[in-house]
Length: 255
Image 1 (cartoon, rainbow, N blue to C red):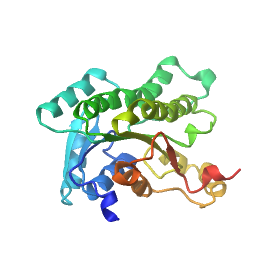
Image 2 (image 1 turned 90 degrees about the vertical axis):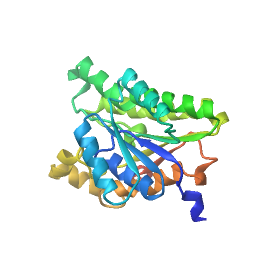
Image 3 (image 1 turned 60 degrees about the vertical axis):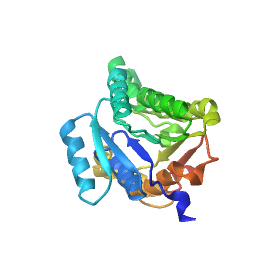
Image 4 (image 1 turned 30 degrees about the vertical axis):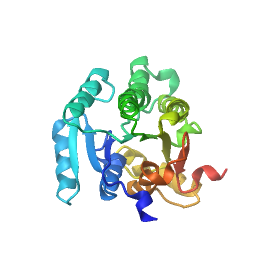
């Protein structure tokens, strides 16, 4: 049974993986046997994250590029082609948050959030899927959604639109790529203790609301997403496609 979840011999790319959820997912997939490519926009932070995991004996490498830059993404995949590195698993994790009421939101900020959280998933997945299809090797694509893939909150309209788009983009990927043995699914994290959420954790009122509105009564931790990511990356999920699995402590299950 454990071999169902064994990722030995597979190569995974995790975008936005120098810290937070992305780093936890990269470490989890590497621990399950995959060779993992870490990604961020800065070479120094990518190298530091790679060194940290390599020091624990994990098989990792890094590549700094902006996931919203189609040319940079294409160059990264072209280099991996030359190096005979084949991405079997892609986790589109890179994302940003920007809080402002919609009536005050500048178009440039809207576009930046959409590009980073949604368009980048299309750009990177397109490159990965083209190669999976050409190799006839199948593959796994995991997009990181959110509670806002299902419902909205005030002041995060662009993020909500992007994460709602992730839900439907995942379904579109499944509709087009399932025939090539590519499983495209998504994970919808609940409120997770990350650097991006630090201002919310430090806000006593918001912190109390998260804990009181969640049946689990607490924030989630990044490593609590690892099991779902390994499952969706493995042979255990070979007939699971187009789904979003929420890892939220039961938050969406209650009113």
